[in-house]
Amino acid sequence: MAEYQIEKQHAKGKLHAIERINALCDKDSFFEIYSAARHNCTSFGMDSKEIPYDGVITGFGKINGKKVAIYAQDFTVQGGSLGKVHGQKIAELISKAIDAKCPVIGLNDSGGARIQEGVDSLCGYGDLFYQNVRASGAVPQISIIAGPCAGGAVYSPGLTDFIFAVDSISQMFITGPKVVKSVMFMDITAEDLGGASIHSQKSGVAHFRCPSEKDCYEKVRKLLDYIPHYYGEEIVAEAKFKFDEKKKAKTIGTIIPEESRKPYNMHDIIDCLVDDDSFFEVMEEFSVCAITGFAKIEGRSVGIIANNPGGMGGILNCDASDKIARFVRYCDAYNVPLLNLVDVPGFIPGPQEEQKGIIRHGAKVIYAYSEATVPKVTVITRKAYGGAYIAMCSKHLGADFVYAWPKAEIAVMGAEGAVEIVFAKELKDPSKAAEVAHKKQEYITEVMTPKIAAQRDYISEIINPEQTREYIVKSFDFLRNKTQNVMPSKKHGNIPL
Image (cartoon, rainbow, N blue to C red; front, side, top):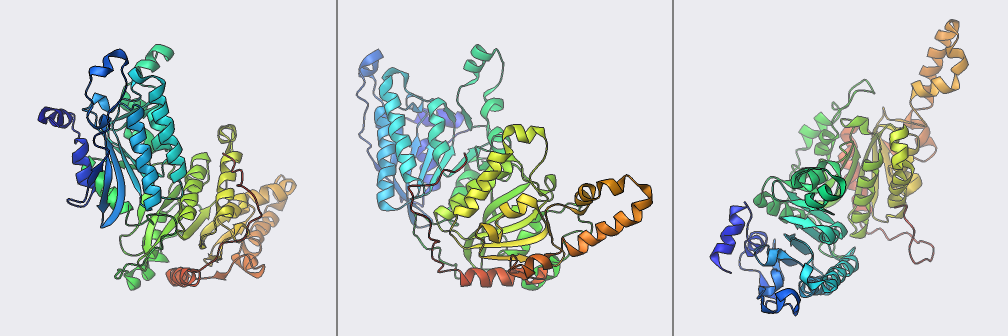
């Protein structure tokens, strides 16, 4: 590749395609395939155009010593545009990765469909999408948005498991700013339309937002250390792990405030349960009332789903429901055990979320947990109310073990709401204030207590916060060879999308 073309990328603050591949892969491990591929389009003067490797570098390499398939679109070659051969190269690479049982990493930096190739360009996209779907659940697919990604180009990343976006250089949109202006008469920049922060914080399209390409590639390498590299690969425990048992056991019981309505950061509890500095959050900036991510417990990978009282009280809204359901289904697809930390006041009320379809979105959580056959351990730290108690991997949805802390509150709703409904008439009579207060306290001590759920066999054990790590470790150890639940004979279910 000519030097000036590489420098052209550098001038935009971007690495060249081959530099990106080398930054991701272990040193000298990448080998290219299909390098001689060329387009066969003769219209619009294309017969005289030389497009090296048809604008995309494809091949295999190693990351952390394990094989990966990788492709990188080269924006310096015909704007990285996708034609038929370009698309076929990527599609064949994914097909080979399925056979070879290794993850696929795509570096997307393209102006979109190659207009000169017409329907052949669309054929290239179709071939690629089809292989994305074939690979789903068989091998992990990771997309890195390392430049523009517009039109049909966004759907291949959209079909993959994890999307990484980089500040200042990542852009994803169905139609760009020029089309938006011509159709909607709206002036908007590419960054405001589909930049990294938009898709990390608002749309939920991007799972990770990175300040630089270097940071991005380090995070990709880290992610690959947490997940199986193909369906059926066993997660092997690391030989050594660190966990400050005394310090964390002393801390965990002090995190939750005495006042049940006061917020706290669920990350603090996670840190007290997992191996030191091992929590790797996914979709950190999107719908912060829910937390999803990978961690290590005694050196083994687990998926963690948690409500976060520090974000909107930990309530379940449409976005949080989607975030949780998708992560649960990913972990279940690759047999990653699930640890659920529950402190949820319910599904969010009100017309705004109802009109967005909270019923449909919330049903995804119920479906995902019910469908999941991996080991599932749930810990109720404080609140577990109503339908959200059921949805957050209760025993009723197939949790293997459910533990509750002594002050956990498990009920249809909180005490105040219950009293307002059950004793509505008495509340209107000032002379019955003491009676109502007594009934409220009775509800707290006799209805909301986890002892009731434990007596009914809905809770496996009531445990002190300091015992939580021990119970989690022993539970997952017991469940390690868990066999899948027998489901009725069917082609597949119909998740409420």
